[in-house]
Image 1 (cartoon, rainbow, N blue to C red):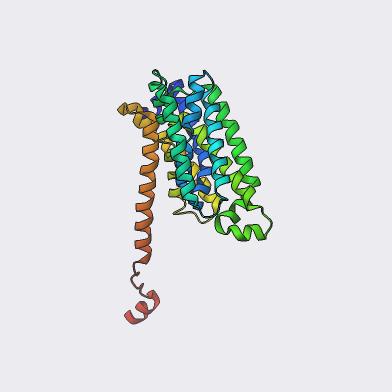
Image 2 (cartoon, rainbow, N blue to C red):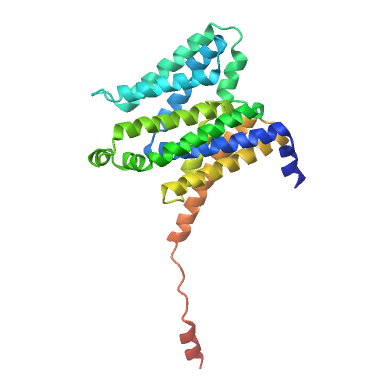
Length: 291
């Protein structure tokens, strides 16, 4: 048991664990709606669309987190605005904004000769470098995400299953969609510092996708996603400590592995339930025949 406990006796690993758990909770709240509404491509585009803001903030000596928030917010606003243009599909607008923001970020990065290290941190994160102030920020983000999820739950449900009915019921689907984009932006921005933009979907998509195979109610999906994300964080940190692998990447890979394990388990469970059960003999009749 010492190999399980020893890594978490180190202070920076403890902070990494808390950060991973908090990120898992935030991503469970946002990722559930992403999975149910089929917004994975949008989330991917928004995560990479943060590059211009992070690059500008780093070059100007500002806070990369604020730059990421501004860039992701601009991306979300662009998706919301262009989504109203007739004749252009939603995927087309997301793809164009994705390419435009990413290429702008690369152009900005190309003007800096000393951006390689920062870019690596942007792409892959550094969960072992989390500070106490980062934990406070994650806790605040979790509180905001929880509040938005509770207040917008009814509208989000209607938006996921029938947007026209949501409009008929007066639930203001456009406002609900904007709030949902804001929730997704919050989850991505606070997560990229921990696991990086390329790996953020390990915690944003995989746990809810694994939980939705077993849960029938949305709160249950969120709870299952939070548990799986926290488990992926714990196992990922243990593997990273003992095998010397990159912590953020290991957490994300563990989360994806849990998803595939859930898929396999669900498939086997369905096969077992579909298998015809052997007839159980009537014990009383067998006794009567024996007599």
